[in-house]
Length: 145
Image 1: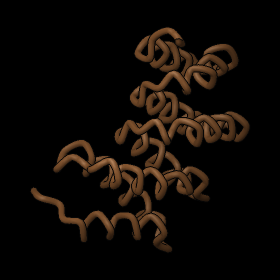
Image 2: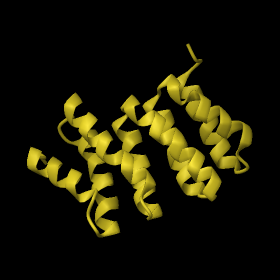
Image 3: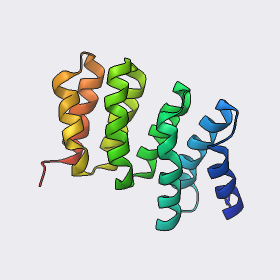
Image 4: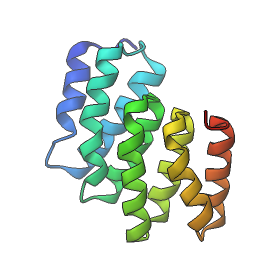
């Protein structure tokens, strides 16, 4: 299936839709657009990352998780700092599902900039599967340079 620029722009616009399911679906479709269809150009990736970052603060948990997943799938280092901030917020709010998605996203991005957030998670997280995901993410990134 070929995705057009009009499809891409529709997905970006849907991230601001009033319907929470439409926002979550748009984030997931952006992740799939970048992973399975024609590769995004660097400009498109930057546009998608910029549009997904505000969704990390969406009032709906499903949208926040979808945005974090999409940022990981796009694997652009521009998502690291917002994901790290969202990880801190998710730790304060007790959203373990979001913490897990963010930790995995940071590992997929693979930027050394994510190491401090992952180390904090490894040191302070009480949930074993999230600690294990942080450990795997750190191993994937490798030693800080």
